[in-house]
Image 1 (cartoon, rainbow, N blue to C red):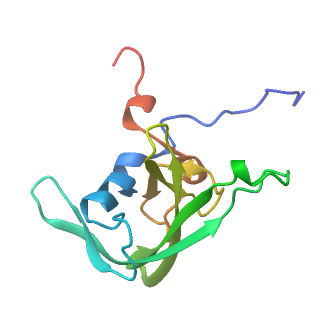
Image 2: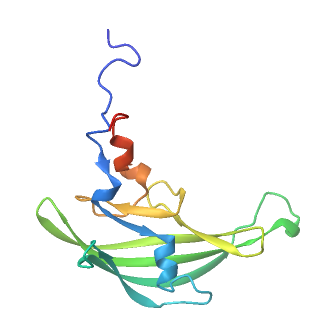
Length: 164
């Protein structure tokens, strides 16, 4: 008894949902002008709205540039070295966890990946797993943004049964 695979599996019905919390996407940062080249120490207020355009939450965001040479691939040939562009987004916001309101300060690292046409694409480095992500989430009851996997979130569509 108690062999491999025995026991209860977590039900998709019991898992937390992406749609229940807040999310921060790279595209939202771009819309606010926080990814513009040579932007340093700019500040903006990010707002999350409901369907009726009422403000659900807001965060004060500050951007800092940090360009670092990370192209070391182990050999002494400098032809393959690249400069990775980084930005640090400093968020300041308040959350309520178990009836207590906390002032939270969180630094999120953004990394630019060079793409084929000579430009670059920005990604978050998840603060928990350091994985490359396009969106970070803040579910109810949590204090910090992290990726969907780290928060163990499902989309509503993943929890539905096949029959509806």
